[in-house]
Image (cartoon, rainbow, N blue to C red; front, side, top):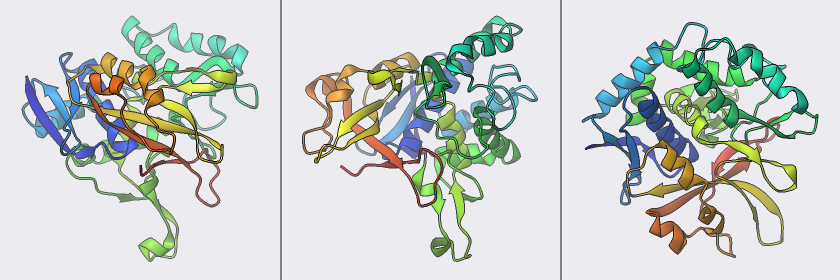
Amino acid sequence: MNQVRLPALTGDSPLGILAAFGVLRLLAQFSDESAKLSWDPASRLAVIHGRRTSVEEIVKDLQTIVDRIDEGSVLPGVAPAFPPPGAAPDGLRAPQTQLRQTVAPLLVPMAEGERAEAMRWLASLVTDLTSDDTGRAAISQFTAPTGKQSMATMLTKPLAAIRKNPDYLRQALMSWRRVPGTTGENLDHRALWDSAEDGSGDANMRGVPGATWLALMSYPLLRTTVGLRHRPLSSGWHTTKLPGGRAYSELRLPLWEQPISPPGVTALVEHPAMAECVTGDGRSSPTEALQSLGVFSVCRSRRYQPPGGQSAGVLRTIDT
């Protein structure tokens, strides 16, 4: 089995890790069932294991997957009707008691494979096991919609960017280039860019379109259900208390040495030992149980709300 290191996907940020998850899932789901993922302990680079021998081959296969997305659709292997197109009000954010009735007409006309893929996305993006403050089915902790954004538009814009400039996929794996006017879908705090930084006098966003799209493609590996006090709980999210007693929700993503497949990634992210990797002083340290699973580091991040922000905030790595 060949090993290909991805120079731009490092384990020091949630965007880099989620983008690596997305690469793995796309390759395994749509191109090469044998694909696996590990991390280099020295460089913390993502490593893809499989039949490919170079980054160029991986980029080529990812581009093929993009090219095969049906016209009008925003997801590989899913018909155009899902998620419901258009901006807010989001057609997928139905009242808790009506989610199943809302989604059923979208799924019934699909072929079996499309329906299964749509169900994986549904289980990631929303849950009817609990509700938000308005009574709607709760959404994933990975999403932080703002303004008129819907699940469909969240997925549409990064896809449109890489369709317009296919080189964004290569940049995502080789060397990130920030593009003015593109967002990081609140997965990348470095996408925030103010007037003092760019000298233009105007606030702007500078995301990495290819990496953002790949990160979004990881979502079916990260399920959303319900936790304590009927709050939504997505894979990898934990509640932690800082000195002083204040509680925060934080995302914990492991880095591991052994090659594992997509189901293994889900199992590792959701492993109970991930809840025990933070010490009393707020620092992270893989426990003996995690080390026995090959985990050598854990990347932690929390939502940061910039001045004037109207979403749940943008993910920012915790320096521990």
